[in-house]
Each structure stands twice: as structure tokens, then as C-alpha cells.
Length: 187
Image 1 (cartoon, rainbow, N blue to C red):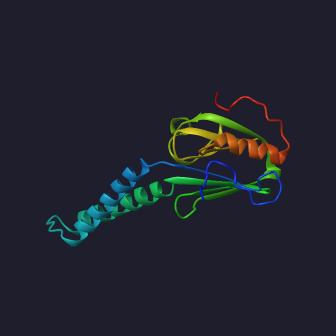
Image 2: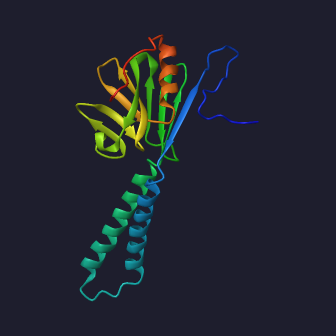
């Protein structure tokens, strides 16, 4: 049996799929996570085998600084190594990282439009991760590439980078009975 992850999964007997799933991964984030682990290890090494003669305060600041920087880098990058998007009949749900946090759920009743964005870059949003920019809206950016853009009823937008975003946009438009035409976002 072959699994086709780019095709929507069919869970009902009808001709329309009941759920669409998509994923995106950024392996470069593992390098940043390794740097965070190295900072954490340095902090532990300083705490265990330090022979500083200049006093406890500089040692304590170095240990706490290295461990805090290491933990922030490690967990901050691991949270955005991958993203999983699931669209069913009720909502779009985005889960980041291996633990699924942070998580965002948008009811389809709040969506007024869905567009395909052929090129979303971290530079457009100010980096990787969960981003907000007043002129653009909110985004989950884990890598450069295609993404889907939701226009919400309150005028805001939500963008997520995901593989096979065009299929996700088609699925959402079918669910909302929206026209299938339109210009790609960001084009």
C-alpha cells in the first residue's frame, strides 16, 4: 500500500475529501538547535568544572547566561522545525514543531478568502517562526517557498508555509464555495 502525502485524504464515501493535510519542514533549524545545545553544554561545563578566581558573581552570570541562551535557542528553534496543517469541514489547524506548540485554529466560518502564495520568505516576515506584522497580518513561516494565505472576515490575513499549498487553497475554496480563480498572493 502506498501513501500519497500530497493528496487529500478521503475519509467519507462521497467524492469530496473530508480532510486535507499538509506539512513543511526546515532542516536548517537543526543547525540552530545544535548551537543552542552547545551553549547549554558550555553553561553546564562552566558550572561543574570552573576554577574562576575572580569571584562567584562573574561565574554565576556566565553560567546563567549560557544556559538561558542555550535553552532559548534550543526550544525556540525546535518549535519551528516543521509545521503541520490540517483542514477539515470546520476549521484550519496549524501545529508547529514536534509537540504541536504553538497551535492555531481558525474556523472556516471566519474565512472569506483563500489564496496561493508561490513565494513566501522569512525575510518578508522578519524571520522564521510565528510572526505578526501590522501591514501584513500573522504568519507561521518555517521555510522559504509556497504557502497559503487566508483572508479573515475581520480584515486580517493568516499565512502559513506548507507543501502543496495550492491543493490546500482548492480544498478551502471548495468548502467555502468560493470561486477557483484569483491572483496568487505575493505575486
